[in-house]
Amino acid sequence: MSTDIAPLMELLFDIRKNSGICETSGLNDTEIIKFITLDSNLSRAIEEAHVYHLGLRDEFDSELLMSPEID
Image (cartoon, rainbow, N blue to C red; front, side):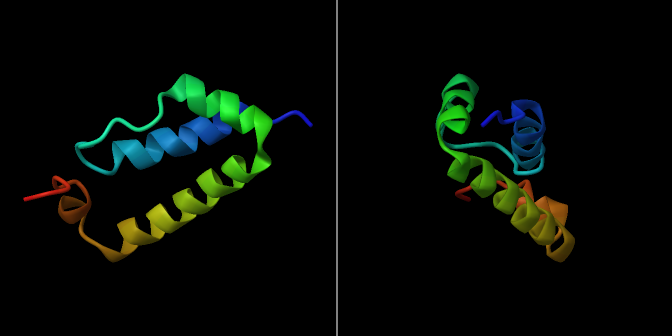
């Protein structure tokens, strides 16, 4: 099964862009792309995380979401 990677990566970029400064590096994009092609569960998780993140953005002030992980 072929997975269209670009839209999923755009969802991740949107989450990152609206989440403030990251304190941890996590997986790099190359590893994420590789895993997306191997397991459709990651695709679903990214889509669900984006929907959840949009809800947080609607509920909370952007200043809160853009604040550092630890004050």
